[in-house]
Length: 288
Image (cartoon, rainbow, N blue to C red; front, side):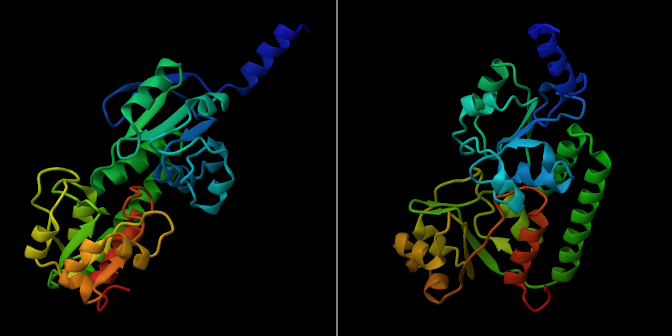
């Protein structure tokens, strides 16, 4: 057998099934192979979705921030969510790349597609679309049944939280995405919805932009009873407050009613864990 014939045989044996054109959550047409065998994930939430539907063995590349489940830490790294290394991605020969509007840049998606790599994009901007994105990832991986079971369980857990906090007084919450300058979640953002589902009221829920800058003076005027800080790396709550001294103008911060909360920026299978943790902070008397 010639080298060329041997190479063609190996290529045929390792290629995924025939591609079918599907629409992603942006309505884009994407040629997705039947049961793609070599997947690159460009966000931690997507990596978690792939593992959660039982397809983690097909991941050949993940971002530097993909640390859950623990098995994801051993996968080849392709860079950050905002700065993936396209050369490394291409060297892994993926037959599908998974991306999200909430972490990845359009320019990188377009570049990968121009180089012949199909990219399927999800858009998890609400709890309903988080569920949809999980189910869609399961679908393109040929794990539809597993996706349905996972989504049903997420819906059940969210409903449990909703029943637990129903009728409870809603504390006023300031969520801090970044502290200097102060950046907060606006009206049509998943974080704002999760605060509401957890039995709270975001003091910035009326702001029309996704992540607007906000003055500390205005934050003080809105009288938040609880301040929540988004996680950034491994820094502790105390370190963050030292770096963002203006937050000490908020009475809630001075009185110790400030917490760091994880997972709210990972719109995937563990969003319900974030919801429960948030509800537990707001209503420890009824949520365990």
